[in-house]
Image: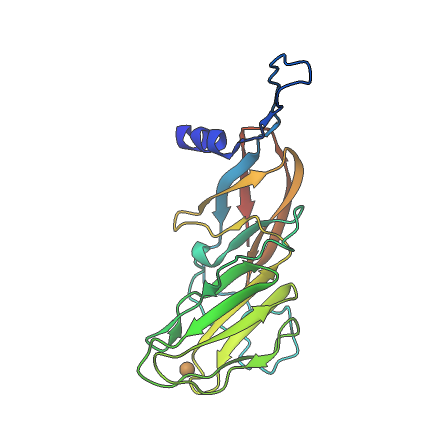
Length: 235
Ligand SMILES: [Cu+2]
């Protein structure tokens, strides 16, 4: 908790304006300061431990854009959850440097990658065989074509939504990009804990989302310099 509070001190921006010497020669210095102190939310996400209860969706050509994931899972990993705050905009906040989603050992390394809308994603091929990533998802249809080991290809994701990734060569490869109209998001640690900082004081909507489990939305009250606590449950 102490670490968070120190973080807020660093976040508080101070604007200081120095006025010059007045016309009559009297030296007057006026310091105008305005500071913005943000709040944060911290909490825990819970997912069921049992076997996957929904049918796997086995084809990338399914029209079920928001249906369950195609991936078989014996249990759900809380690290595949994305927690995001909907009451802030993601526009104009896309990372200046691209996000990297790597392909290693015939897998897309991250099962799900959250990004703000407008972000460019680099897809390196770190294997010693060709890959061919593509998506038929409505927010971004693309086909990178076959590309060689060591090569990288990029896509800009300019509309919010879930973009499912497949490889035209390896049918077992899969992943997803969650394009958010929000720049305040996190993925929980293995114990389900997460923190999102940089929130304006006030009421916010917070969502925990999982590709197969759906979403849990709740309202939080963020106070200046404080960390709101929340538990989000997916079942
Ligand atoms: Cu592949």
